[in-house]
Image (cartoon, rainbow, N blue to C red):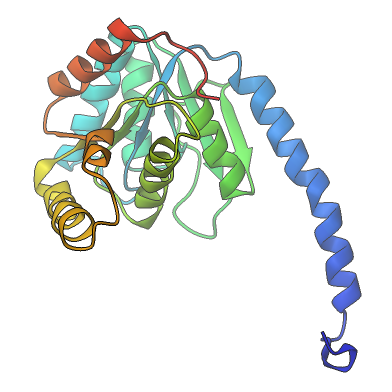
Length: 229
């Protein structure tokens, strides 16, 4: 870079970037130490904007209760909407209820159904996503927005590229997810050949709590429960 073109304060910015490493390390260390103690859990994702009177909110509660009744805890992003419903279902069923909170300028606040000793706070999305992937035995993905899609495609990419072992990724709501799945099949797979046919097996699309539980049970009848990397 031409030194004359460096913005004012460039050296100070670079120094601050270096010090940020220690904050990032701190989030990883705290996350690993606390999440390693939670036991087998399934993560539930979905929109923070889903209201308690929406059918998806109640469905998320029911799914979380079923997950707990089959021996797992529940992890969510710790906020309102579908995240709150997931923690509420786990709480009502007497199971482990974990919240991985993220500091955001809107939407995010702790919900009241997280276990007191299992609420973690993150500044960095990428650290938080590592915790989801490493300590989840499955992803249950309810209808959501950009954040939900980000977490979904991160996990699918890691499985596709064999960076982690396969685990169940279950999309709930055929009406919501059907258009995306059709586009993946028709455009990514068939038209442009940007994925392989086997990549379509990375995820499942269902409508009911019973289907979610059946997929989880069948998978772990065959594979051991353990952290993903």
